[in-house]
Image (tube, rainbow, N blue to C red; front, side, top):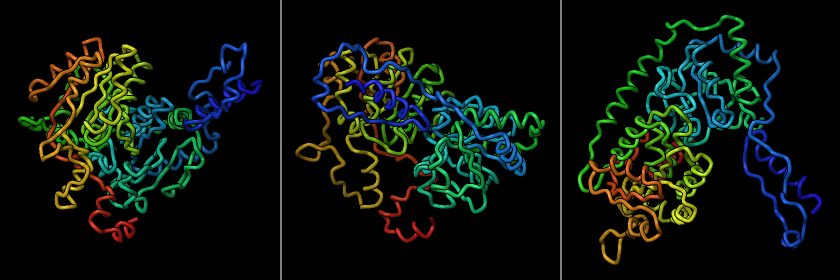
Length: 451
């Protein structure tokens, strides 16, 4: 028992130090049963980014020398930028180099996506202009990214990255990330915020800011991206079942009106569609399970997020499959009076997997369509479940009601469930690559030949 404070202090230190993650303290039951006069299991307070560090000055000078040899520089902001709270530094570096910025799913919003140098999210479900920028650049400065499958088009060369033609300077706090997926030309181990600050200071010392003319290589991409977003915002509503892209469009319009809204996404359209089509200026607008695509993430995460950020208006955007698998989060929200909105995109299926079955297995749906004893679609009545548990419940009858219904739920002061009957199609466009499509299409040899 006398070691518990030391052990807890170490556990928090490990969890929050370096690249943050989970630590486990396994306490045997006989220890839990002991009596103590202590009122707390730990006495030291810990916080994220306590021990920031950067490479030495000589290494920073070499990095700046390397950067200034290139003309088409692209900055890639990963989830480490969010954790390091280095968004301001990404913006300063972008301005100093007149370089556009793309992001991974975890880094989305760390650089304001309404900024003229923002090219959005790249990867398998990224927008096509972010992927093009990556392929056309001669240097990528990658900050705090693990180059996961979603952001790297399953590591298949030529869709998102081609490091046979593009140089790579990588900044990461974790030495284990060095050359893990791609061989970098230069690796800087350090905290993102501190390391970027040192690079920016060295650039300023050399008066090395780039002229506006250097924007010519990406200005065409930015124009194409503006048109891409504009086309999306004109998507059709649908009739008895609302188109999933229209649901995302309405959420974008609501967020443009109220930047205090935070969307906690699940999987499928709620994650990949928002990542591809949304313009987000604050990382707190978009919380996602990322590439792990954990179905059922959103309901519980939304409750936890609202506790940690009580001033935010929190919407869990989740499919009917995800909501059904984690519906107990609704009961917790009611029990503790946590006003979270659960927006259920109800398409009576595990939509992403059914989409793969539709595309590659002749529409043979096995275990993905929610039907009753016959062929009729079946789901529990989510609105009645909400009302029976003490939450507000809303049934959206058509797309024209959606925006007003979400506003009403956000202002209700109680947990709320919005049931949105949603069409199965269209699928989220894969603008990069996802190797599972090669597997299902029988192109495994192609997949490995391209890596």
